[in-house]
Image (cartoon, rainbow, N blue to C red; front, side, top):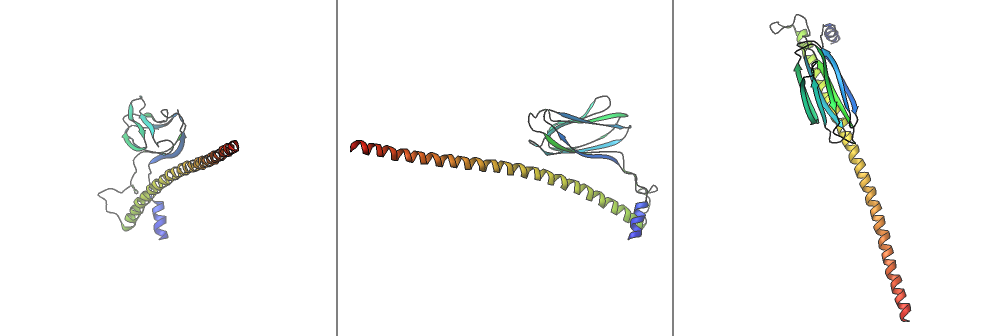
Length: 207
């Protein structure tokens, strides 16, 4: 088993270049990210709003000549894929300018390039040995595990934020109800006392 793991580790692997980050987007603000790409390079963008307001954000992507490749408004999450038609700096922007008082926390995953085979000599017409097949299977399973962990991590962060907001609202509502009950109780006591004081005054007048 150790020999299999070392053999898989020593294989030449060309991975996709990528950037994965989580950032805060203030209200009435916009943040842009830039990446220089060659021609005929495929890139993929995944984003999701983790917390803030209605969990939505504006997103647009432009090429080096400022041509809009992608433009969506008030999206909670989305994915976008494109193959570059020219070399240059590509821009990915997230905007929260439509929000006046709520800031957002956004997750973004930017990947570009094509993943090469685990082995340089590997192709669809090439028969794989048992060791090579095991390495390929392990590689595919690890990719699924990494994607699943990212998805669960995002869902956990989003659900935790929603639970904190719900707890805060319930706390404020409970405090409001307590204050209201106290005010109503004091008002009822004062009202009853006024009734008895009026009766005492009338009795004293008749006597």
